[in-house]
Length: 568
Ligand code: NOJ
Image (tube, rainbow, N blue to C red):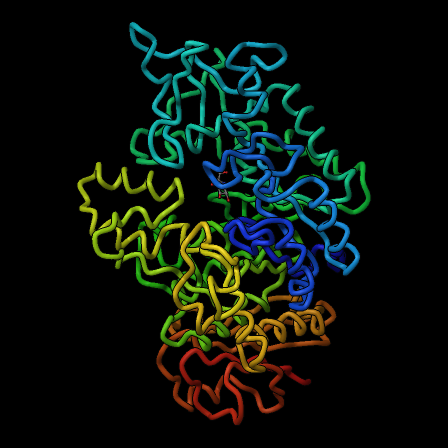
C-alpha cells in the first residue's frame, strides 16, 4: 500500500507573484495582493501554495536570478509582509512552498561579487575557468546556455570566464565546493525555521557538473544548437550525493517536502530520485507531457498529438505506481496557456474543462497555475499596434534569446513572431484577470505587463457568479479528487484505446479494488458517434462529473468529458 502523506493528496496552487494581484497599486503584483487572495486560493480546494521567487532580485529572469536569498524583493514587500502571508495561509489551512533556486544566483549576489574579487571563502563559489586562445578571451569550451548563446561569460576583474547555464546574469554555483552547500543549507534552514512547508527546487537535476581529471569541464556534443554540454550536467556525477545532503536539512524538521524541477527527465530516471530509500526528492516536475505539440520546447511547434500525450501519461502512471510519485501539471510560468495549446480557444470552456478532467484524475499531486482555473489563454502577439516595435510586447529574457538564435538561423521576424505567439513564456505571465473592470481588477494603475484583452469574458468575478463556469468546474474536480482519493490519487491506472486520436479513456482503481472510476474524454472538436460511446460506458456506471450540463446525450460532443463510478 502506498504510504499516505499530506503532499501526495494536495492540490498545489502556483503563484507567479509579479502578475498575481497588486496590493499597493504600483502596477506590480505583491505580497499584499497575495494576502488578499489567500481565501480565494483556499476556496478552490487547494491545500498549498507555491510561490515563484519572492526574493531580492534584479529581475533579469523575474526572480529566478536571486541577489539575496534571505530577503523579499522590495517590489513585493518585506519579510514582515511575507510572515503575514505565511501566518494567514497556515491559519486557513494552506501549506506554503518556496521556490529554491540554487543552480545559480544573480550576478548581483554578494557571493558572486566577492567571487569576482577572489575574496575568501567565495573564490570557488562559482565555476570559473581560464579562457582559451592567446589572449585568453576565447570561452573555455563549447557549452551553450539554455537561453541560447555561449554558457561562458568573461569577467574582466578576474580575467576568467564563469559558467552560466541560463542568462549571463545567472552565474552557476559550484556545488562541488562544500562551503557552497553549507551556505545553501543555511538558506534552507532560514525559511524552514520561519515555518515554510517545503521547496520547489529549480532545475535541480543540473547542479552537478562532470569535470575532467584536471577539474575543467569537458566539451559538449557539438551538434546541439542550445544547452550544449547538457550530457555533462543533467543528472551529473554527484547529483544524488548533493540532493541527499540537502535533504538532510529537511529531515531536521517535521514532515516537510520538496519537489524538483527536472528538465529531460523520464520515468526511469525519476525512479532514481523519487525513491523512499534514497531520501532525495518527493516528486519531480517533468516535461514529457508538455511535448505533445512540440519537439522538446514549444518553439519547435508541431500539431497536437493525443497519442503521444497518452503514451507519456501511460508510462509515468504505470512505471511510478507504488514505486515513486507523480507531479501532475498542465501550466506554469514557463508554459504557454494550455487551452491555447492542447484545447481550443473557440471552445474555451468545454476544452478547458476536458483538460481539467484529463489531468486531475491521474495518480499523484495536482498543480494548478494561477489563472488556469479560469481558463486564461495565451496572448495574441501577432498583431502589434500600428507603428510600434512588435518585440516591445515581450518581457521575457528567453523570448529575446530564442529570437536572436532564430535570426541567426535565417528566420524572418514575421515567422519568429508567429512562433513566439504560441511558444513564448510571456503567454503565461499576463496579469491575472480578476474582474471585467479596469485593468482586469489586477491593479488600479497600468499593469507592468499587458492584460489579455479577453479579460472582459474571462475573469474570476464573472466565473464566480456562474455555477457552470470553468472556475466552478475546477472546484468540483478538486473536491472529487479528495472524495475519491483512494482511486483518483492513490489508485492504479489502466488505459484504453492507446492509438485513438480523439479519445482518452482510462480507469482508476483503488489499491483494495473497491473503488473504480472510468474517465472518458473526447479531446477534439469533433463529436464521437453513439456506437463508439456506448461501448465505453458499462451499464452499471454512475456519472459523477460531466463537462456538459443537462441530459447526457448518447454521443460525445466536442471536448465532452465524463467521469463514471463503476459499481461491481
Ligand atoms: C526554471 C524556471 O522555472 C524558469 O522560469 C527559469 O528561467 C529557469 N529555471 C532558470 O532559473
